[in-house]
Length: 105
Image (tube, rainbow, N blue to C red; front, top):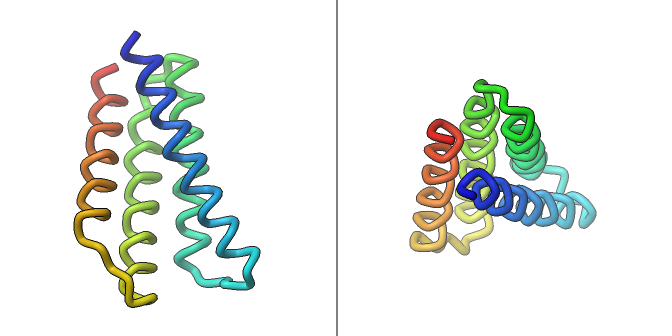
């Protein structure tokens, strides 16, 4: 049951981050940070696939993906002048919980 919850939340987080990155890239915002967010999203989705295959290395792409997503989001917030600390703290806490889930399950 926990692996299913972990997978669903990870897919949702990864997909939403990928949609945000794709929307920014579509608006010709070709910054490295938007590409980094897209790469992080794909890494997180890769971690879900590895978890389904029961490969114990699934935590590594989850960690890298969440780090890319969080760093890109923080950079984008600072760059655009709309940095919301609570929003980023929640994103980091969720990322930490997901990585812990991949390590434990």
